Image 1 (cartoon, rainbow, N blue to C red):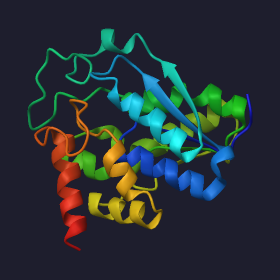
Image 2 (image 1 turned 180 degrees about the vertical axis):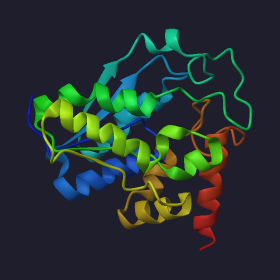
Image 3 (image 1 turned 135 degrees about the vertical axis):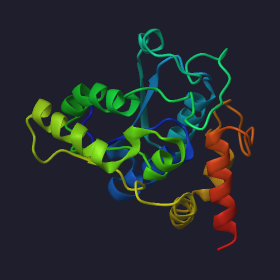
Length: 216
């Protein structure tokens, strides 16, 4: 497998796709790898969107299967029969971001990548109670991965972590990809393209941020 400078955890949603655009801007498309996970999530549309976005950016793409995850966790993101509801969304999958990052470690080693990008935002934790979206959480995982990789220079990049949704839209605009990503990314928990179902927590947060950006 070819060497790269950065691997981007890329779901096909807006935030991870902005991270992919940032990595491409920094290193060039030949030095970046888009990495997705098939964990029997509620819909496959996000993986299809990620493939399309990576292809548009000229970035290599790889998907890792995690077939055992649904058997461990009860979540509306994994089981379509469960309605998405609640102030603390029942779409939460315990430890998902940590699992994805740690699963990527062998690929980091093989490709000699020096960093992983992940599009976590502390805003997600504040609005939805997701504990694995904070920089504090990512710092813990980064420490373990540095130990596993025996590389104290390895880093997990979280460029959006302290931003608002409107600020991420501004960033995408500055990279020249906002319009493309609005039309192509899948953020909706039901797999519906923009403007999504307009009812799930992800749609509400994204569309509110887009509205705030348009009013700046």
